[in-house]
Length: 417
Ligand SMILES: Nc1ncnc2c1ncn2[C@@H]1O[C@H](COP(=O)(O)OP(=O)(O)OP(=O)(O)O)[C@@H](O)[C@H]1O
Ligand SMILES: O=C(O)[C@@H](O)C(=O)CO
Image 1: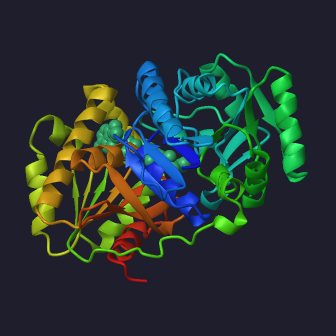
Image 2: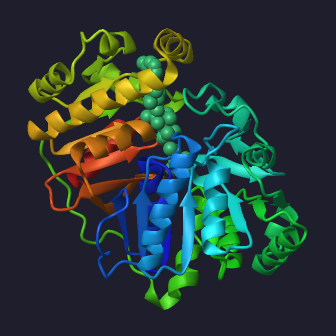
Image 3: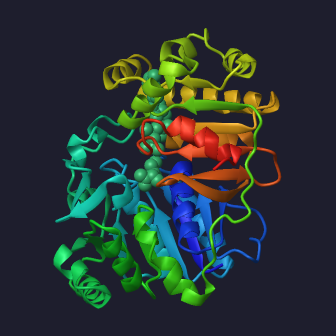
């Protein structure tokens, strides 16, 4: 294994795994730190954690455990994958985890680049944009767990870090890999080793990937990983993606726990012509909604049923004020984890989930330890197959995909073109 990756959530990990597979690596995604050795025919291993919203100490501990395992598999370079919208709070966890990985690796610096232009995320002058809006005006300022109120990644990261934050601007990026590498060296020598790098296009990201050759630690969204396979494997050793993908054509269901703007649009669109059942926070808290009832409704439905808890920011805020943010998040995740378990036990073979925390809870609830990466459904979301089980899934990050994502995902999971 050449590239060792640590993902701070499950959908983000499959986003990264998809990017690496698309760019020529044989990739496997593990749920948590695996036991034993990795398969020998794998170029990159992605250890999916659920550390994005954990307390800092716990997130650092889990990430270091993953790093130690990846080091033991012989990896030469390491990647810390977080959200392309830099989801974190002023207390962490991106800064503390990055610094702990640097310490353990003896790395003198780390690249910090959340840009993912295929999904509209770009970094310019150290500021993160989502399409034509600053991060803090993109809807992410209402995120239920990690509201992003500052688009200046340098300032946000500095709040979370003990090391100083540097910056490589677009003028160096467009000048190519050597100029980027020189700018990184200069920031590092100047005592600013957490180096935020501007990128607005795939060409920028490939140049950053080339500049990162020989650097032990790269951090970011999946975009900045696109240039790594060629450097690590050499152009002649790249593989073609997902040649042996086989879908499942059995019964399907969908679970949406994300309250993001895009997931809410996808729910609206799906519900116009397909069955959907809302699971409100109140119903989960007072016990009138149960995983049993929800799973039964989906299994009995003559066409795929969408179960969703998603709501507009005011409703989410009201529920959080009523019950507590952590409590409602934990209860919803536990609800969907158990529902997923019952769905699969009841014969569901294609499962679509929306939301990072929600997807993580579902994968853990199903006890899936390794996922094989299949074709891309939309940028950042591959079809995945549960190793050794007749089950295929799409784990969608909250804001990814177009409005018709749910229909498209079911088709790709079925294996139809
Ligand atoms: N009806 C609701 N009431 C209150 N909170 C809700 C409701 N629906 C969802 N939530 C909260 O929103 C969170 C959504 O998190 P999740 O990670 O699944 O989606 P996301 O953050 O939009 O996705 P991503 O992490 O991929 O960007 C849930 O954990 C829960 O805390
Ligand atoms: O980078 C992204 O935007 C996604 O992979 C993700 O992590 C959202 O949860």
